[in-house]
Length: 269
Image 1 (tube, rainbow, N blue to C red):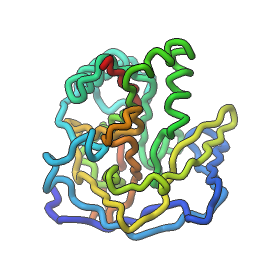
Image 2: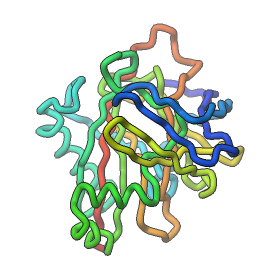
Image 3: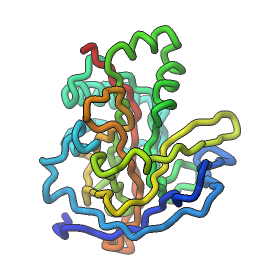
């Protein structure tokens, strides 16, 4: 396991001068066509292993948790073991880690780098939801009336990222400390698919941003990522992240094979 204090990564950002960033997908899982040329920056990414017990989901927007799984290296999110085995594990994990009263699991994405027929790692500093798109997604899942009721309490969106083969050396995940990202650096970006449209935050670069990764993640570990929080009490709300090429990875490193589970958490008080 790496003991180097940091690595250096090329990360794609939205240039400041782009007013309305847009990514258009000709097909799900395909390459995005953007209406701008990304600004590539060399980013210093700290080795979170050296202080991993200090990171907290509510403060930093991310947290590494050791939580073994009985799920094997499946290649399809529709595999029956995902619903039968993995979803109960994730629900239990998130309730214990966050104190949520209810966990709504609504999506699994499996990414296998280099698999032409599958979803690929995303090389863009981004956050999955925005101030508007997260509540809209809850309404799509639960209906307007039930969504309104849920937002009378606190609602949070959390992604659970896990390697399905490990340790991960190729294309690890870098995450930004939520406290180091200014609101104006989160840029609303349209995601346009053949049959639908969505919205995420893409990130504009700032030297104040602080990035972290956890090298050599195993299948017994998960990374929790805060994508949205309705609470306005100073806790983390958005956590930009991106895949990156680690220059320290050996050339013969196995392809990254991971599952990302998207959830909404509901708190009664």
